[in-house]
Length: 427
Ligand code: IMP
Image 1 (cartoon, rainbow, N blue to C red):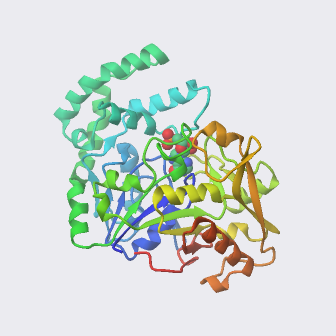
Image 2: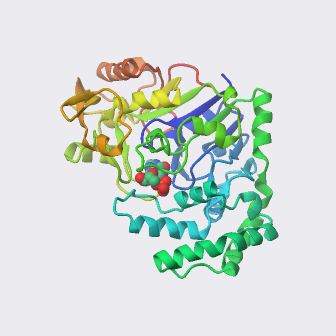
Image 3: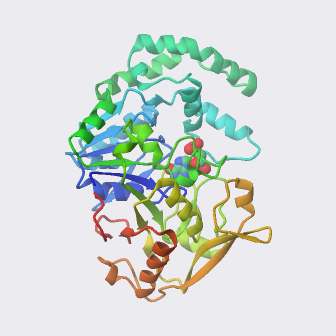
């Protein structure tokens, strides 16, 4: 296999950044294909912690080509701040290229995101970064692409076309003062000038690499259950966070993609609103949150925590065509007397074996659990192979493999690069 799509198999925050960084050692190219700075990928290298929002996690290796693909939405200010902070820490960003087809998060997108969320009765709990409104404009064909941002005359004429309608919406519906064309240009043009040298036809770069048999990682953001089509709609993000998004968001034919690594935590978390059947609103949930340091990388919000939902994971396996799973944060379950896995949902007196499509149905589901012995005395943190794990942790892994039908090819037992072991080749 010469390429792999790394996809979140749950509600995001599964540790994709760490896994991408690890696999990037053997890769030639890392391509981010969707989402924006709603994502937060944490990579720990020695005593250094890097929090990346837009730049692919491969950037920490000087010799890897990193691509921000057309499917990503880019806030230029955030991207430049991220570039500056990496440079300040001695990380070269010379190998980064940005698709001219990627859409730009404009100042009015951020404002609209916050105003729309505030006016919603059923909150989504968006990150407020302008992600949704930017994707809305992309689909409505009123977006601005990076290729236009970096051409001052083009940007001006696009804004002249688009801005009046934005201001009508902002002023008429939300009583916001709106935006002046000159102000937006004054903000955007200096940013665009700095980004311009990095902008180009990344579709060509990625397809050349494919043709040359290069090893490529397609790095997803968020997770399958937040996918605009396959997630717990409407409590989702606005992009295709599942594996199908890689082809569209990088410009690579689906026929070239056949290796998909799903990243899943040994339990579940969710940030923001929406159904979460296995959520623990008690001391156990608190214990997972504390042990797993479950606070958002982007917003700092405490994450909702609960037991592993194997029904959801099986659904994720189906939607993504997972060829392997990476199980992360197994060490967080160290010390529990027993561990539970959701294997079905009780709904109106029936047991459902599949994840229902309707969020309100999922919201009423009561999990059916399989309780397995935990490893109260054992620790997984030092394990460097499967046999090093407490036998109960091994059984936990085998149970997930049997239930989903997917091999767990990589296990992570702590934040450091070396707190990981691989059980089968991935790239
Ligand atoms: P948005 O992507 O900001 O529009 O937020 C939509 C939903 O997706 C909210 O529930 C967010 O909390 C969630 N979300 C967005 N990005 C991430 C992420 O990277 N990890 C986890 N949840 C996310």
